[in-house]
Image 1 (cartoon, protein in one colour):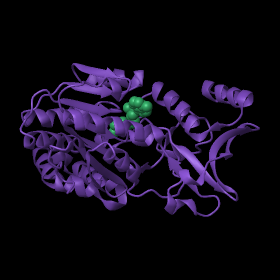
Image 2 (cartoon, helix red, strand yellow; image 1 turned 90 degrees about the vertical axis):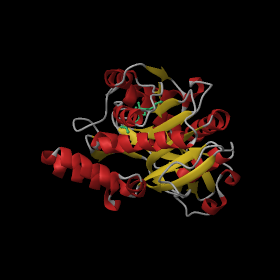
Image 3 (spheres, helix red, strand yellow; image 1 turned 120 degrees about the vertical axis):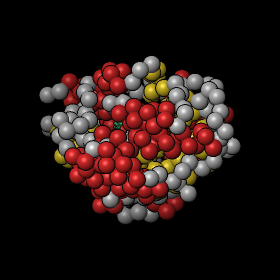
Image 4 (cartoon, rainbow, N blue to C red; image 1 turned 45 degrees about the horizontal axis):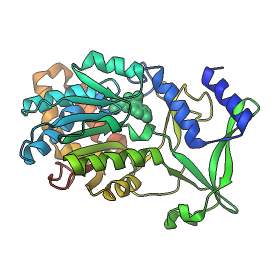
Amino acid sequence: MSSLTERLRRLIAASGPIPVGEYMALANAHYYGTRDPLGAGGDFTTAPEISQMFGELTGLCLADAWDRAGRPEGVSYVELGPGRGTLAADALRAMRAAGLTPPVELVETSPTLRARQAERLAAVRWHDDVATLPETGPLLVVANEFFDALPARQLVRAGDGWHERVVDVEGDRFVPKAGRPVPGSAIPAHVREAPEGSILEVSPAAAAIVRQLAQRLVRQGGVALIVDYGHAHTAAGDTLQAVRGHRYADPWMEPGENDLTVHVDFEALAAAAEAEGVRVLGPVAQGAWLTALGIDARAAALASTAPARAGEIEAAHARLTAPEQMGALFKVMALAAPAWADPAGLA
Ligand code: SAH
């Protein structure tokens, strides 16, 4: 039995069931803190690991936003949850070609992944959270598959109203169940009357980070690109999933040994950002965004310089953009400081 499973069993035995959000927070802190989960030999893959085109186009989008803001001095590249550092490496190379070489500020809690990032990127600074990011100069922020890994609460509709969903132990299993009641006023009106058994996911951690980023953009200038899988509008649904070895696993088994995610509620993040005074663009489908940024031309250029890899490049292009692959489920939302223009591809 893993050490986290033991710890959670003891915690629940001593003080009762814990909220799903707490379970997810402890599981993912252990998971990301103890391994590099990416790539073919790992548990899952991501857009920047599929092709350099993703990071390059992201970098060009940021460089273009900076250019249209009048090329201000003192701008920083900020990435949340940079994984292996692949997106940053590709984005910084594309930005350099566009005349921009910003200092690199990475928000990353995993020591294992910080070590991987150090192998790929020179002269970066790490942060445990967004609070310590530079206080001056515009910020060019990217977060790919970061918000889905943040802990979400689950609220469940029972016969007598909404309850916090909690995790208990039964025999050798963790089991989710309805916990203490939550007031109906805490549930968005259009979800409140959902049928019994419905689940609403709310991520206070994600909303708090978006609020802090938005405050920084208003004060310092800049833009943020948030790329993730999720829904454009708040809706009921249990999207908590576990992935291990590129297969779905049981989220209530072996916490900390598989990747737990929830779909991102872009409407909730947009509301958090707008309340702080930034402009929100999108979300738009990832496929449409990459196409607007010129992925077709980039794929053709790469294939012409490496004809032996043409098939692989075409497959990566389809994987990133086709609606039945990552093109539609993955979405891109941008936050823009009041004086900055809309980032490309989000109109
Ligand atoms: N963006 C990368 C990796 C996505 S995996 C890619 O697209 O390949 C999620 C990343 O977020 C990992 O780097 C993980 O260590 C980091 N992460 C997860 N929870 C975090 C938290 N609370 N604070 C900072 N980083 C976190």
